[in-house]
Amino acid sequence: MTTDPITENPGAPKSFNRFAIVLLVTLALLPPALFYSGNPFWLDVFTRLVILALAAVSLNLVLGYGGLVSFGHAAYLGLGAYAVGVPVYHATYGGFESIASYNGWVHLGLAIGVSALFALITGAICLRTRGVNFIMITMAFGQMVFYAIVSIETYGGDDGLTIDVRSEFPGISLDNPLTLYALCYLSLVAVLYLVHRITGSRFGMVLRGARANEQRMRAIGIDCYRYRLVAFVISGALCGYAGFLLGNFTTFISPEMMDWTRSGELMFIVILGGAAYLYGPIVGAIVFIILEEVLSGYTVYWHLPFGLLLIFSVLFLRGGLSGAMDKLTGRSQ
Amino acid sequence: MSGVALSIRNLHKSFGGVCATDDVSLDIAGGELHALIGPNGAGKTTLISQLSGLLPADRGTVIFNGRDITRLPAHEIALAGLARSFQITSIFADMSVLDNVAMAVQAQDGHSYRFWQPARKDKRLRQPAMEFLQRVGLADRASSLASAVSHGERRQLEIAMALATTPQMLLLDEPMAGMGPEESGRMIEIMQSLRGEKTILLVEHDMDAVFALADRITVLVYGRVIASGSPAEIRANADVRRAYLGEETDPC
Image 1 (tube, one colour):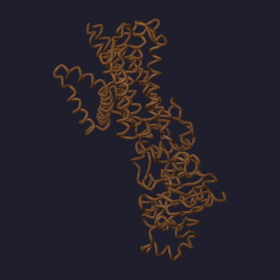
Image 2 (cartoon, chains in turn purple, red):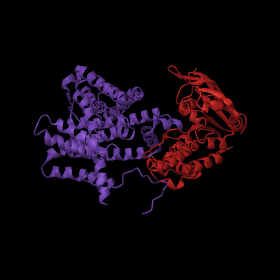
Image 3 (tube, chains in turn red, yellow):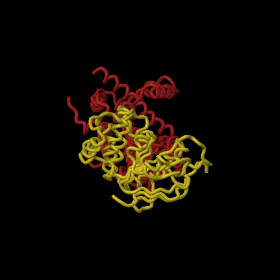
Image 4 (cartoon, one colour):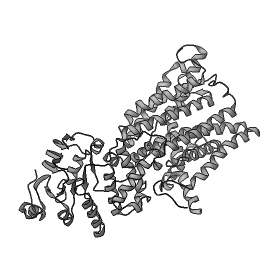
């Protein structure tokens, strides 16, 4: 096979993509098959998996491609879910007329809009710091949202709130678990494609360059700050969308969704799966869900093996599980 | 090109009690290849870093093409036409050689808020980038990973990246450091080819190269300019000889 030196990218993983397609096809076919064969419980597990993967893919845009370790991304999941719960609550029990609604488009707009705005405001501050400071300050903003929600009695404070009615869209009902799964799955595929296009674009090259060598970027005339901020906003908005799906899936919202440990789980998923890979977060989410389902049956300390696995992965598997798989498949060819 | 391209006036920078740049004033004419030499620790890289905006000066002014760039951030200085290379090679290691140059072309092109079209298939970036690689003799390494090419080739890549920002003036910080004779020879050829087309401020320890290339030479010792003139004048200068023979000069 001849390659064109003008467009070739030697840094890109090649053998892994086929595996990723197998993965996506499995996610499309297996859950409905399980559902029809009398295992609706597994459809729930897969719905949660796909939503987590979607949130992790959005985190990966800043973490993997931008090198920005955000420790506060659960806040966007929470904001997205509350963007469903709060309007529904007011539509049912009155008050806050301006946003009270069952309309799915209102929820969707709020989820994405509020998340993007929050990312813009906090990002503008966080991105002035680097390294550990960035990790801590993103976490601090995440916790700020957590405590703000805890303090609002109207929405149940600590206990959270049941969402009585799912987002209403003309023509489709999210009350049907298969429809909901289809929406989540198609959203994941769409967001994957979006992130793929973004990271390969001019903007994406700037984002990668900023991660690799910021000093060099400045020396060729690019101020990385604004590009990072835009990436942060895109990532926050996408994660808020994942939260919108999560709210419709669980029909229950609580501050616990945006606790810092949730942010840690998202980071775990991205890093274990392979941050440099487009499909890495999906691999990470699958491993996460499997471990959670299997281990939590044995012990309440099911987070411990997670930690050990993450340490092993960081020490020995460069590029996470995807990187390891890429190497294996690459060698066997 | 004619007239003064870069004018440094009373530039001063100290780190704690150490004067890295001590009242430096220097004019560099347009199209000139000006060499900056001096013993280790003379403050050459510090001076380059102030000129390129990566290090703020304490006092003094830098005028580039009649514009005061002293307080401009680094990326604006780069866009104003003053490009630099680094003493310690600074590239994007996990990208291809061509990607590296294409990034510099893109910076110059100024359209980086494009989110959809693949940058690696963008002929407006890749074609010019390839031409800059040809110019420094790296075209055959275009698709290699930047971290996989030899030290000398990475130095050439730095020059290509600096050229890709289409600067009027280049600040080259020891482009030949750590090179073998053959690689240095190629770098000298590259600089010969740029002579007259670009104004160049060259920091270099290889005296053969400096005296072969430079139109004018400035000698920096303990952050202070002790001599500035033609190669012949510098060769004959008693202060310069003393500095290079290692005699003590008063610190500031």
